[in-house]
Image 1 (tube, helix red, strand yellow):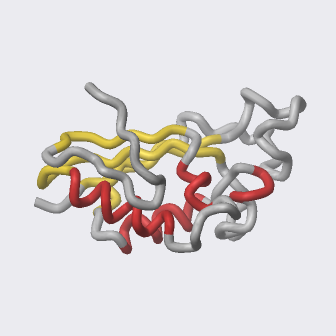
Image 2 (tube, rainbow, N blue to C red; image 1 turned 30 degrees about the horizontal axis):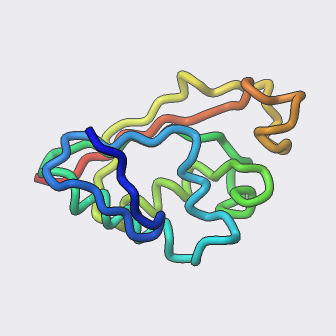
Length: 132
């Protein structure tokens, strides 16, 4: 497989994919240098690239519940419900979620790069499916 070399806000994914998987970086779609619609453009590109029934799997660092997108640029975390809202708005169906990587000891208030929490963040896993 060749690397994709396209702007983050206009990814040129090949078509007919079975799976798009992203780990610990969905929140990056909301970093200050990128336009506010970057996540919606990426989600739309993923939807186009997947074949009907294809999976979009997202693993990322928990932000405090209710924080929406506020922690993305500063803490490199994202609110679970914000991700669900954005991805389902793009046309995906939330099929499953897991708290297997959740860590109640993580206060969710420190940057994921802070040495006190690095490698020990609470994370969520979401599996979305493109409708058939």
